[in-house]
Length: 132
Image 1 (cartoon, rainbow, N blue to C red):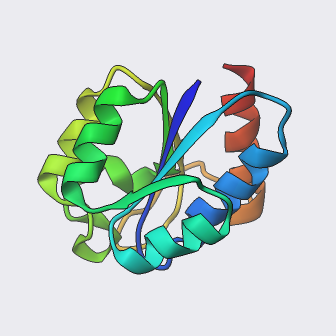
Image 2: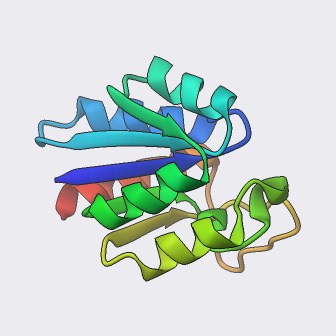
């Protein structure tokens, strides 16, 4: 299964997702795409073998992925303090991949009903990916 992990800012969430996915017994081809080079570098430190940075990497990765995982903002244009371009949000939204979006109430977006720490939400997201 091809998993695309998308993250921005410092890439901490993406790194935690990758580290958790690598602990599973499932055969996963994980690609990390950061919206900036710092996020990409952090996800590489988490164990991603394939990694890229920027808008085109998100667009191409979204076409190839079976599963896309990241913060909820990856489907909202101009989120993550403007790091998610409209083209990125459209590529993720229109992808035929299953989307596992982690609710994060930051950057002016409030997610009603999302509860738990970021770590707990990442754990739930990884569990959902493993079920697929």
